[in-house]
Structures are given as C-alpha cells and as structure tokens.
Length: 160
Picture 1: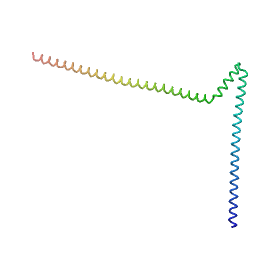
Picture 2: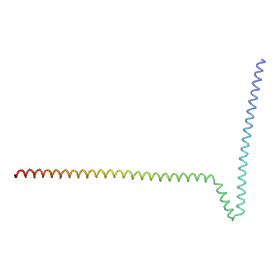
Picture 3: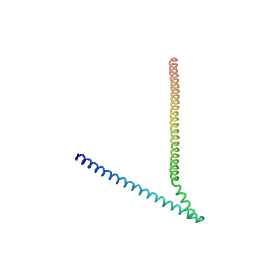
C-alpha cells in the first residue's frame, strides 16, 4: 500500500510540474498576443490621429496649395490598397497587350514565310515545266533536223 501511495504521489508531482509548465506556456503566449495586439492598436491609433490632424490642417487652410497637396496626399493614402490593385491590373493589362501584339506579329510573320515558301515552290514548278517544254521543243527540232538531214543525204545518194 505504501508503494502505491508513493507511486501516486510521484505521479501527482509530475502532473503538477506538467500543469505548471502548461500554465507558464499559456501565460507567456497570452502575454505575447496581448503585447502584439497593443502594438497594432497603438499604431492604428497613431495613424488615425495623423489622419485627423491632416484633415484638420486641410480644412483650416482650404485655399493654400499646401493644403491642396496635403488633401491629395490624404486621399491617395486612404485609397492606397486600391491603387496597388489598380497598378497591378494596369501592369497585367499592358503585359497582355504586348503579348497579343507579339502573337499577332508572329502569326503574320509565319503567314508571310509560308506564303513565300509556297510561291517559291510554285515558281520552281513553273520553271521546271518551262524547262521541260523547252527541252521537248529542242528534241522535236533536233529530231526534225536530223530526219531532214537524213532525208537529204538519202536523196543526194539516190540522184547520183
């Protein structure tokens, strides 16, 4: 019985250490989360104060160019996330237009290259036909000449 109680006591002591360690871990995690939240909240409050001061400045001096510049800066600052999205959209649209132009140029170049190749092939085919016709004409003329010469020689030999 004594060993059972001693084993239970050791086990309870270990559980208490683990519990204490988990409590410390949880406390440090909660502390860090609170400190981070406090830093973010103070930064947001700071920028809210800066925006309010800027708004007060622009409303009190409505006609000056500095106030106008500050007003434009405030509007730009308020719409900064939209401007980033618009800038990326504009960049993507310009890139797509460039790709479309390049694709059109490539297809035009391919069309002209294939047309040139087809016309060159046609020209060579026509040239070959003309060469064959000229060769056929030449053979016909040569054959007629040789027949006439042979006939002339035969006629001359017959007269004698």
